[in-house]
Image (cartoon, rainbow, N blue to C red):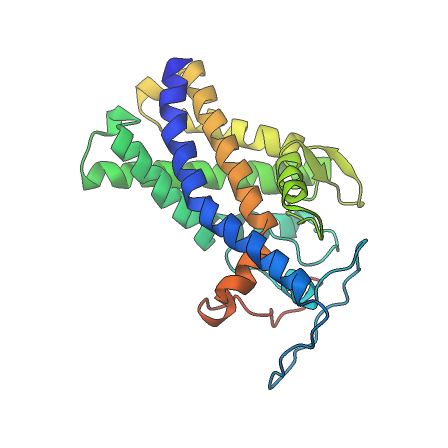
Length: 268
């Protein structure tokens, strides 16, 4: 148990440290939106039409509705329409998530942490070793998305996208993000046990035993990596939950190409 804690703790610490300012910013933005909800919007030179959105209990701010109606640049799996995806769209979504900035950043940081902790010592040290760790982590993420976003959701008719909670307290948002680990929406609009989300990463970890160093190909090491990956996924869900507020607060649409409203049909 102690080796698992030694490996998991620094990763969780860095994930929390990285997410904390974003969550504080998002929470403050939500509170600010509630205060100014009754004030008129500032004039803008051009308003682009957005897809009609349903209002939840208590209502949504206009800004949040517009942001949730956009295709996310950083998180392609962040739902912007409730129309179900077919198998081909789930495959494309898996590919989009794999090369998304969010996944590439997590891959780079994870490889750096592994290098610093001398995890996967069979790769050694130095830039060449970092490249091997980065490539292995990238392959792991890609296979996780193939299993958890495309293959299993297609077979089980699960919807692999992330649907943020429209309204609620900070605690409710975090609870919703964590619940998404074990419960998933379905293609018909219901909910089901998140077999796709739980078995997808496990299948990817099993596959990684074909290319990781020999010392990592044990049952204990496989489940150790699986636990770390699930913790990272949970942290990612929390960020997605507050993404509309973070998006607005940081004005990402002005600095990130493709972060603005999609020019494509929002209902593919």
